Length: 81
Image (cartoon, rainbow, N blue to C red):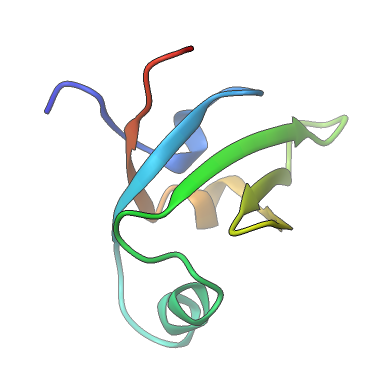
């Protein structure tokens, strides 16, 4: 799987399929409850002016994550269409 990266490595407009949410505890559980489940498509909408946080679209809604949070989400990059 050469296209496996963490969510924080995707750039504006890129999409990925969630493979796994890493880590333990309340933050991981919160992401899973928000729909960060394996097989779910996620897209980078935009970076904040200082590049942190980043806005993502998942399941029709927008969520902002900091880089250290996004680094805990393993995704497979979708080919550019």
